[in-house]
Length: 433
Image (cartoon, rainbow, N blue to C red):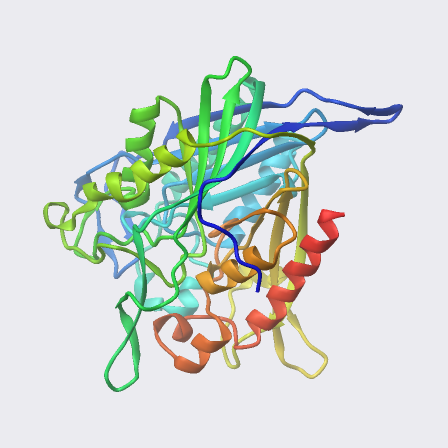
C-alpha cells in the first residue's frame, strides 16, 4: 500500500474551463459566508437519549461555500447538526433546483455531527434502529426555518462571488482517538482505544481573494462531536463548533468544519457531562492551532484545473430482517434472489489532477478513507462524511466480525467495504484521466 507523508503540502489551484470554440482560462470566483441558525425556543436534541435544551452555550451556523469556475457552480454546506435523513436532503435539493437551477450533484450538505444540536426533519432510518430516541416529534417550524435560511444563504453567497484562488494542503492533529475499546473478554464497547486505527490528517482548502487576503477555509478532520455527554442540555456545536469559532476569530474569516470518516473516531476528551469538566476549550489548541499552523505553512504551486462533480450509486446488501423507512424507498432495491440492497449515493468532486474529494451519507470507519487515500491516483484525496443525510454506520469488514455498537446499529453487512471501496477506486482512476 502506498504511503504518504503527513507533513503539510499544498497546491495553488486556479480553475479553468473549455468554451465551445476552444480552450481558455476562466476566472475562478468564490464566496464563503455564515448564517446563524440558533433556535429561539427549547428543542429536542439529537445524538443521545431524548432531552430538551435548557439554554445556549454557543451558537449554531450554516457555513456556506460557493465555487464557480465559469462553467460550473458548486455549493458546499457545513451545518451544526448531528444528522438528518437523506429524505430531507432530497426535498431541499429539489427545492433548491426549482428556485435556483442548482442541481443536486452541485450541492453537498454536510453536518459537523455535534450531539448537542436540535433534531432536524423526519427521523429516516433512525427510528428503525433506535425507536426509543424518536418518541418526541421534531420541531417542524424550526426545520423549515433552517431550510429557508440555507436557501437564502446560498443565494447570498452566489451574489458575493469574487475572483479568488484555491489552495489545498494537509496538516496533522492528535485531537481524536479510536473509540472501539476492547474488554479483557474480547468484547468491543464504546470507549477509548489508543491502539486502534486513527486518522489524524487535517485536510485543508484555503480560499483567497485576488489581492491575497483570506476569504475562508474548508477544513476536513475526522472526529465525533461527542465531547459532551447526553446529560448536557445546552445547545452547542461541541468541539467542531468551538474549533471553528476559535480559528475564525484568529484569522478573521469563516471556516467550514467538514467532518471526515469519524465512524470510529472520538474526540480525545469524550462523554463529559458539563462544560466545566469537559476540557472542550483545549480543542482550540489540540486542533484549532494545528489548523492555523497548516494554513500558515502552505507552499504555493499553480496548476490549471476545472470543477467536475459526479454521483455514483453503489449497491450493497442490507442487513437481513431490517425494516426500512418509506421516505427512503429510492435508496432500496430487491435483488434477483429476493434479498434487499441499499443503494448508496457516493459523490465525487474533482478540483484538478491533484485534488479530489469524495463523500457519502454514512458514518464511515477511518480505515476505509485512509485506504482510499493511500491508493488514490490523486496526491490530495479528502473524504467528506455525513454528506447529504446519513444511513448510519459503515464499519469495516473486520469490525463486523468483532461486533460492537456501530455494527449493531448499521443497516449494512460485512460486504459493504468490499463493494464500496473498489467502486470508489475505479471512479477515482477514471477521473484522473
